[in-house]
Amino acid sequence: MEAVVDATDLEKTYGETVALSGASLSVAQGEVFALIGPNGAGKTTLVRALTGTVEPDGGTATILGASPSAVDRDRLGVLPQEFSPPARLSARELLAYYAGLYDDPRDPADVLADVGLVDAGDTWYENLSGGQRRRVCVGSALVNDPDLLFLDEPTTGIDPAGRRTVWRLIEDLADAGTTVVLTTHDMAEAEHLADRVGLLADGSLVAQGPPADLVREYGGSSRLTVETTADPDSFADLEYPVERPQRGRNRTPEEAVVVREIDPAAIEGVVDYLEDRDIAYTGLSWAEPDLEDVYLSLAEPTERERTRRLEGGGESGDAAADDSDLAQAGETA
Image 1 (tube, one colour):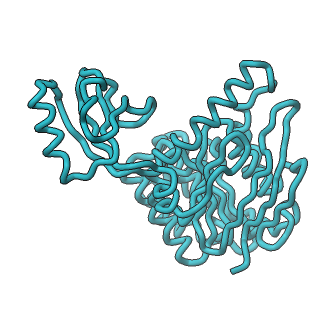
Image 2 (cartoon, rainbow, N blue to C red; image 1 turned 60 degrees about the horizontal axis):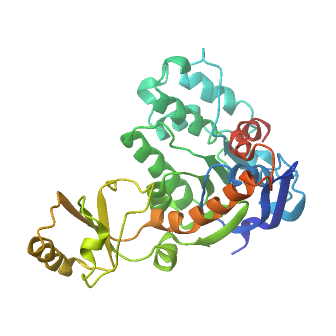
């Protein structure tokens, strides 16, 4: 199938800061492709290069069969992370305003229903909740019924019910043939929505593939988390690898040890081990590896090296600025 998005070896620097260093990706029609990665990794610069709002220093890109700067804008939808529409217009009026920018827009009432805001349609934007505002912003990127949709952190600030509404909407769009490229820091969102995930770190896509494939290749083994103040050395003669939990992992207690490469049938044996040695513990939880493990496995070493270079004076400039520029991309795209 012909690629809707096709980029090869994209490069971009801002002063001495390297934002992209040979990023390549290809996205097929109807595919949901999720970009994940740390702040400053290059996600926004990559989106801007793909939407024609920044000119890369090297490499090539096409979207919808054309150069990003020459593509038919009626076929393209862009939702920036930072988006500030007029506050004294209602949700319905805002969608009608954005619909008026296109030759053949969708009915704003239908878009309002799609994002679950029919009951709040006549509420001024400034009086909507943060999650409702974000859903209006999602709707503004849909009024032209785009063939290709770029969404930067589409569910930021949205409550769980609203997030599910947006997820279903993205799934329905993809089922109808819309190609979706989204960025997210929510690994559950990427795992749920994406046909393929690209992990961007230090300006390069270090891994791409279906979430399940990435988890198998990079996620490591299953794990049993034992909530205990005991030192990992107390488990020295346990037949499984034992370690402290990775720093930054969600929902993992600080006072715990992690038993690796273990399946549920062996948990009873670990409990017997703890009791036989009078090792006090307050809880046990078992989990399979997931996309967060992939993120930590691949992104953290790259970020540590990047931090080392920055602290050593190897780069200058505001590398984090990359993630603050997509608002301009959305306004100009």
